[in-house]
Length: 180
Image 1 (cartoon, rainbow, N blue to C red):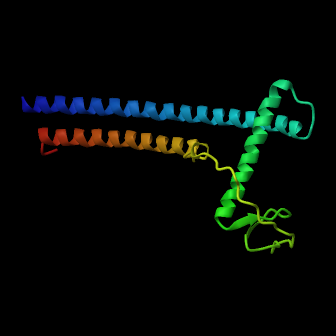
Image 2: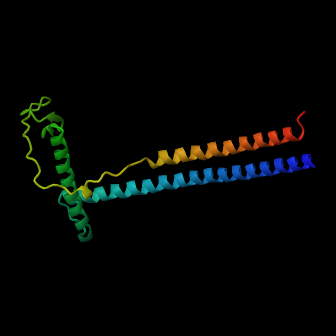
């Protein structure tokens, strides 16, 4: 009677572990496909950004631009100007400025660039403060790196379940027949 119970328990545990292992393998394979999807979506975004950059460069160089795209280009220009102003403000807060000739960063105490010798005027502090909500920092992460870590975790979980099933099966067998 006890031997039959432990045989059934061992069989049930083995089947459950195998089912979980199979499911984890499915999760792993699904994650691999999702990773490929994310990679393709990133490529689409990059290509669209490259296309938009070409359109904006044409607009900035004075070439004729479709009227429906002019508004986008105008907004890009405005945001680019804000970025430049924020960069100047960031450097100012660190006690630095940018050389207009070579583009290198120098301390605000320098009237001339120590790298190229050009005059480096100290910019006036920005009068308009940018609202906090416009300067919120987004936590960026590398989707590919996260995807790889998820794949590794799924694989490790599947391997753990297989090992656990084997260990449970062996333990149940030893309970049934300690001499084995």
